[in-house]
Image (cartoon, rainbow, N blue to C red; front, side):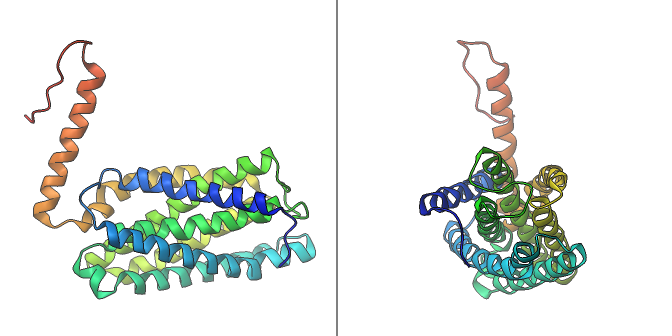
Length: 266
C-alpha cells in the first residue's frame, strides 16, 4: 500500500493522533483521578492502539482501496461494511473487557474508556494519512492546512466517541446486561465509521454530527458509566470529592481578591 507522503509528515500525523488520546483521557478520566485502576487503564490503552491498527487495515480493504481505484464512494457497500466492522469491534472489546482480572477489579468501564481511546486514535491517524496523500480523491487531499484542520476534527472526536461506547460496554458488563449494549454499541460504531469515511470523501457536512454526539456521550459517561467502576462505599467518597471540587471552583470564581477560599465541606 504505497503512500505519497514523506516520513516526516507521517510522524507529524501520528503525533497529532496521540493528541486525541490526551484530550480524551483528560476529558473523561480527570474526575476519576485516584479512583480507577491505572495499570489496567494503561494496559488497555495499548491494546486499543493495536486493535486500531488492525481496524485501519480493514478500513483500507473495505473502503479506501475501492475509493482509490474508482474515485467513487459506493454508499450501500460502505454502510454494510462499516456496520459489520463496528459490530466486530464491539464483540472483540466485549471479550477483552470480560476477562476475569478486569471484572474482579471492576475496571471494565474505565479500562473500556482507554481501550476506546487507543482504537479511535489509530483509526483517525489512518484516515489522516490517507487524506494527506496528494492522490486521495476526496474533497481534501495533500498535506496542507485544510487537511490538518479536518484531521484535527477527527482526532478530537473519533477517540472520544470510541471511548464513550467502550465505557458503555464496560458499565453494562458490571451491571450484567452486556449483550443488548454490545450490538447497540456495534451499530453506533458502524455509523461513526460511515460518517468519518464518507465525510472525508464527498460529504464533509456529515462530520459536524460528531460534535453533538461527543458532548452528549461525555455527559452520560461521566455521570453514569465511568463511576460504575467504583464500589458503593468508594462511590460515596467520589461523589463527595466531586461536590467539593465543584464548590471550590465556584468559590474561586466568585471570591474577592485577598479573601481566603474555604475548603471545608458544608
